[in-house]
Length: 464
Image 1 (cartoon, rainbow, N blue to C red):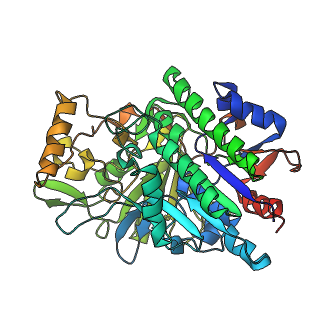
Image 2 (tube, rainbow, N blue to C red; image 1 turned 180 degrees about the vertical axis):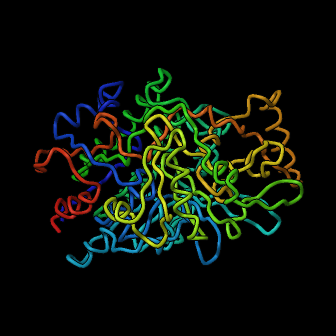
Image 3 (tube, rainbow, N blue to C red; image 1 turned 45 degrees about the vertical axis):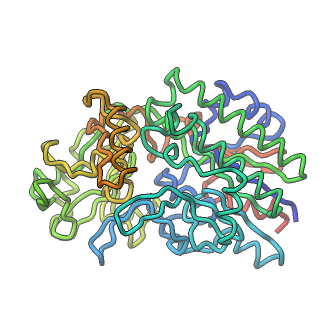
């Protein structure tokens, strides 16, 4: 078997290769650069599921980064069990073809309880006293202590939130991707997997924060170029064939769209008051949206309002398309987890989860980094609230409270969706802004690939 390392440089596009990425550009010239028609929706969990199963959401079930569980009447975001992916994964298919095929899954999503041989993924500990202790999950169990003994603690505060992608007391701007790259080298040296899956999220942060054409992201592109180039050299020296892939392209946006506020104004969305603040009452709502970047799944608990909801949403500025019925099937998202309607944003727009009409009654988690409690994706978590005087002093005070054992809220996130500069999820208008696969030769004949082609390409290149 030929051993492979699939390096996932999130947000990498042909445009990036033209700007400040000499090592990746040279790798592409040496081999071949393929454009990928992105998964739909073009978000992390769906794209990775397409790549690793060769199927679309209608078959593997990953319709977004999160969705509404109709039985529990709850929205679930960023769950980690690999059992949620309802199709065989590439390493499972490979094992069926050749005994001894192994896989290391390093920070790719749905990594807990996976059948991969070695796994590492972010996973805090949640003691009963309400604390959140940063850590990773690893399998086999001994892997967690061994890798941390070699590399130190994973820089979790830099993985997401205001410290991600910027120099801060928590670490350097590229701290997370550097740690993951180092873990990939360590796993290779210790275990020599047949297939290494390596996730480098560095571009994801500032491309969303400022937009992919902002002059400030030149540093990010140069940093990830050096990091990926180093990994390519490392694996080639060990006769492991490196491939570089990206999940989606991020494009500039300037128009946040608040679908849930529209649905509330029409009387279809219901909130409940708790301690003077408003929570989305999904089970009691006749219709509401689960927003995920530039795509939103709209669930109609009362099917009688579906046509009216569709008519209203089609008239909302910033809504480009609305999928239902045959259109959902054509786009490969006709799965029980999907919304009854699926909204696609205009190229310059993205969807917020906001449902409150006045900021004073926004839920407490709205002003925190809280990826599980929010009923939708929130890129505003990348920012510190500019309206808070001496916000860094406030953070220091909150951390002191935490250290002393007091309950605290790290309530420093703004409620201004207009701050966000980049998003993804809808099909890009120009392939120069879309995802890519870079291979070290010219064996793949097609210039443009489907997201579902990646699994077959990996199996072929492993001689499986």
